[in-house]
Image (cartoon, rainbow over all chains, first blue to last red; front, side, top):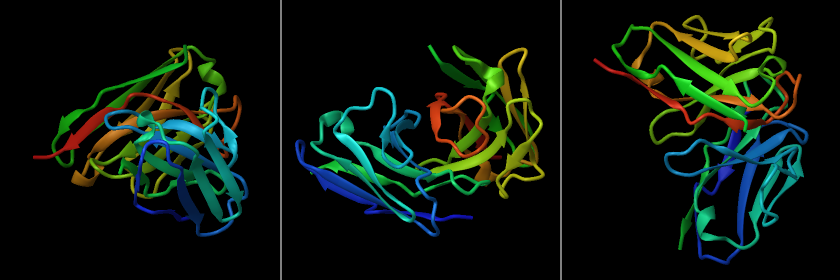
Length: 108
Length: 123
C-alpha cells in the first residue's frame, strides 16, 4: 500500500498570501495524484487531477505540480472561501487508493 | 445536474448490520465504476470499496474485507454497501464517489461525491 504524507498538518496564512502544501508518496505514483478541498460539514471537492490539471470550475489561483513522489498544491492568493482542509490522493497503484492525512489551511 | 445521494445510515449496535444506498442521477450510471469512501469523526479520508461498471469486479479495503459487500443496480441507478459485523471503528460518514472518466476502472480521481451518510456503531 502506498502511504501518502502531507505537510504541514496546519498552515496559518493571511488572506491574499500564497499557500504551499506538500504531499509525498512512499513510492512513485507517476502523475496519478489528485487534490481535494473539504470544508466543515461538506463532502470533498476535486480540485486537481493528473497532478496538475484543474478540475472543472476550479479557479486559476489553484495549481498543482510534481510527479513521482513529490507533489505541491499552491494557492496563489488565499481568499476567505479557501480556508479548509486539503487532501492529496494517489490512484496509480490500487487497490487501495490512498489519501494523505490532510493539511488544514487556517486564517492567520 | 450530476448528483449522488446517500441514505441508510444510522445508529447500530456492535455486531449489527446496515445497508447503505447511493442514488445517482444526471449521468450514465451504468458506464462508471463507483466507490465508497469513509471519514471517521475528525479524521481523514479512507477508501472502502469499489465496483466496476457492470459489477463484474469488486475490491475492498483490508479493514472491511469479509464484512462489507458492495453491489449496484444499474436499472435503478443505485449503489449499495451492505455492512455486517459492525465495529466501533466503522463509525464514520460514508460517501459514494464517482470517477471522472466513463469506463475507467481504478486509476482515476473522484470527480463527484455525495453529501454522505453517518453510521454510528455504539451500544
